[in-house]
Image (cartoon, rainbow, N blue to C red; front, side, top):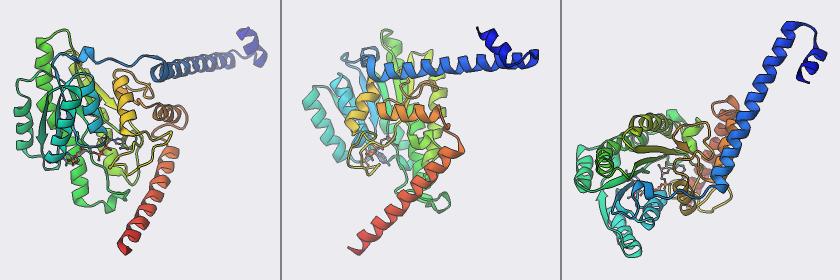
Amino acid sequence: MVSNFVSTISDCSSVQALLYGALLVGVYKLTTFTLSLTSLLLDAFVLPAQTFHKYGAKKGNWAVITGASDGLGKEYALQLASKGFNIVLVSRTLSKLELIATDIESKYKVQTKVVAFDASTDEAANYIVLGDAIAGLPVSVLINNVGQSHSIPVPFLETEDKELRDIITINNIATLKITQTVTPVIAATVAKNKKIRGLVLTMGSFGGLFPTAYLATYSGSKAFLQAWSNALAGELKSQSIDVEFVLSYLVTSAMSKVRRTSLAIPNPKAFVRSALASVGRRVGAQERYATSTPYWTHALMHFAVENTVGIYSKVTNSVNLSMHKSIRIRALKKAARAKKE
Ligand SMILES: NC(=O)c1ccc[n+]([C@@H]2O[C@H](COP(=O)([O-])OP(=O)(O)OC[C@H]3O[C@@H](n4cnc5c(N)ncnc54)[C@H](OP(=O)(O)O)[C@@H]3O)[C@@H](O)[C@H]2O)c1
């Protein structure tokens, strides 16, 4: 039937070869697209949530969470405690950490430790304090959640030196140094207990998935984390440690400055629930190794852009540019109004 169709179009053998080639490529593309979409839908809507037994839940193991005093980090801490992990909470403000630690201990009957330091300082003492706090503990999970973005969208050439340095130091240097501090402890835990695996999960962002004008430094810092995390995933696999990178569009939080939830913008509770349920699954990040876009609307957005205009395309770049330009204009107007009041 196919050969009849091809021969009705042309008698020329080279044209026919071209048509067969085009047909093969089409069938290949359609098959991979259908398989990816099916896999996304299964991950997002059908498969049961991952349990954390393989990472040592309810067996006295510890999870270390950075940026744990607010937003997504606080939710990672609460939800991992509810799964039966003891929790090490890390962030800048000791008083906030202590309140959450007390809350976690009374609600979930697990142990907690708090470690307070300013990640933007990148002092050796920060990592020594953290290392001392976890020395000898059976740590099996690290959540690299701490991160900073621009206070408002800003052209790269106007980005203030402190903001630029803080973003790179917190998102990149501190995340790498914290991982170098905690991962050997995770490796020791899983070496002692061969029945469990370790997990290093790092928060990415759509700001880094798509090159994002007016958030250029933040965008680059999260794109850096994507490549670093994927490289680490390959390195640590043989040591029974899973390394996962989690992508997210907006979530209501102090950082996003979005207060109201919507179909596309979940609250931290719903987002973290989806992230923990999907560990090891790609959901919307079907084309990426050791990466997940776990929240269902974010997953559909990621998949749609990837399979239409493309993540690095001119179209995506200019849509993102005009969106952030207008967010900047609104933010400047709001700041001017606040100044007058
Ligand atoms: N919210 C979103 O829309 C969104 C979207 C995509 C990705 N993300 C990523 O998700 C992660 C969490 O974001 P979030 O929205 O939950 O942020 P958030 O609500 O602003 O919370 C940030 C947390 O990090 C801590 N922190 C901030 N600066 C610190 C510093 N210099 N040293 C130590 N700790 C510091 C804060 O602690 P203190 O309160 O003690 O300062 C707080 O616990 C980030 O990596 C972010 O890039 C967020």
